[in-house]
Length: 107
Length: 453
Image (cartoon, rainbow over all chains, first blue to last red; front, side):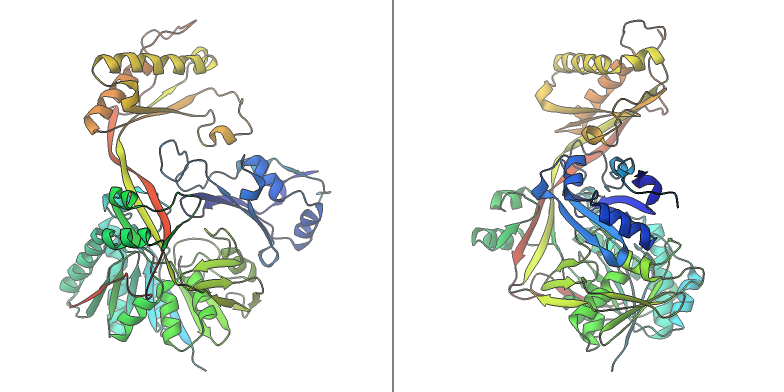
């Protein structure tokens, strides 16, 4: 098993407009990306669970050209509205860091 | 076949860039230089208040270098989404800086100002005619919502820029735009296709962001038939196939389908090939024209006035009992505020506990991690600033001086970092318009005025 936080080169979040967060997990090693993708652990269901939204509200893309997984989810509170904690949406990636991927990550 | 060469100086006008990077870029004879000045990312305040997102001093520094370089080389300069939000006050403030620079440096140019602030009556008429659509799950646009808005802007595509360039504008300062728009305009004007034009714009919208190592800097893009080639002008940075491909993820809901006014840029079949160890050629982009021209709208409304106070505890007894303590603070504030005439329903109070799920809130997976200190940002929002200040004053006092079980720190529970300890933040805005409106033409909603500076 390997934590996403210890095998990905990028794990980040950002606004995609005022009403959505977009979260990216990016790999620099082609073999690692291929192995992670093959496990199927990073999928729309994972984001729905971590960000507490319905599955049909998750826009999920595997972007091979950038060796990246991307998900866009609605914000519970629009950017800058009362009660928002993260106007830029730049610190919403943390729940992904501890997700375990069932691969051998000795490399 | 024609080639169009474009130089973007920085991620946001006022973020800065090395002067030497601009010089190197100008040596490659760009057809147009520019910088995007805005984003919806900093939230609703800038559009609502009409204030700039970057300081006038920082904007002047960047714009001065760009206007001097452009004047020396006879190249047009484009600033998009002026002032951060692209409203009329933002446009005027940026134009005033350009005039000031021209006077100081004895520069002369034809300047175009492209407005993006929308006429409320026109929008209301279109909304009532069923020509607007909500985005992101918002309710349909109504006359009432439009009239309640402080300011609404439309996001222009390339056509208004193209019109201004055709009219001979040497400096263009524009309101809210889709970020790639000015660049796409220059590429389309050069006779190349929409797919290349929009992809080039995507690459240029944030300066050297598609390069490594990341820092505010200049990016040079060459566009030809079927390809876009990117290279940072600073020799310490480089574009790699991965760094460029990665940029397709930036602030988009999808890396492969980018919705723009007039169509969709499809990047699912893009190839990224290194042409040197610092430059990358992208090909395979496609453009799907939309059946109907729609313009995206962004609008904000006043949500009240905000006051805040910041305080922190290092007391382990209090930290161990923090939830009941904060509940008690809320009760005391409600009672005492009601006593001076502000009922609980007349204010909104949030106590943000940093160190205890302050960033992630309900989404925090590590909800019970022990802390040895906690920081609280307490905010009150009311209809008036005076009311908000009264509530926050009471909240600060109550945070500092309430009793709790086992209390040893009997002179005060909070470390307060500032005097004054209460801060009036001013008006608070919220996004209330995020819709599309049908437009008769791509230039219809974006009036252009020209002046000789």
